[in-house]
Image (cartoon, rainbow, N blue to C red):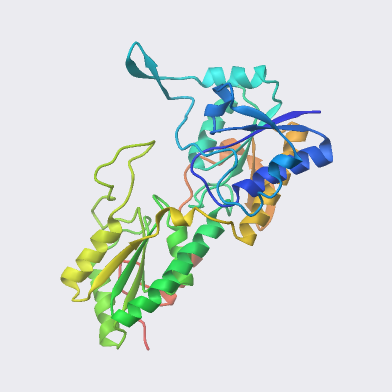
Length: 367
């Protein structure tokens, strides 16, 4: 019998509980292995109450639930932990303690479910001897090495739903409605939901935009009798030659918090395009709530494969979707660079062919 730990790091994403459930049920049901939950990400490994035994009862009924029963932790990087010493806050590297603690707990392997940050930490711990298997999750879908991550499908569905709702009010009031979506460096959510939701303008981090091009698109629609416009904007989108916009310079957390590009675009439209504009920030609605059937299906497959790898003792691997098939890859090969939208790929080409303005140039489309 092997002792398998499991943790969820970074932000929450729909489908995490489905993956946890699959790891527990497959590990116990097929191999008779014992699974231990680790609370609050990597932090839980070092905390006295952070590790607890799981069984069928622990995961009963959690398949449709959003969030994570193990708790999310956006911070807690063991290579850089803030601690109080002599009344001062200092940063310490406690990664060695984490590796030692895993051994002390008698855990044969740890299944880490997370995005690029959490899995990058996993890679560092593996180099120190920690036995880790990765499962990719992030609504941004920006983990290299896999075609899809847990949570992405649900986020796209929610963003598309929001665009559908905004479409009706935009048309009724003859407004330009701007929807700001998550996506710091990768515009997958915005591009896919923008095409699916009938957006007229899509702005993503990979393609710097020009305000005058946006106005040209909106004004041309007005001339052709369409007195409203729908814009899908990634939070990491930026004007050509400009910078990303942050929330009042907020530097809390691991990275400064993005937010405000939707307001900037909306204000410019109202001031320079002669069209009334409103902005909606979808925010954490994209990562909350019950996962779609596809996210449950993908997460269940990822969890089951991780359980098989764990029993085989195949540390250093990451479960991945490639060519529509769930497989596994070397974890160290997945972080050469973060995955971004291919600006010359089929998705962008499809958007342009549909007459959608991506902000860099205005392609006239014949009626």
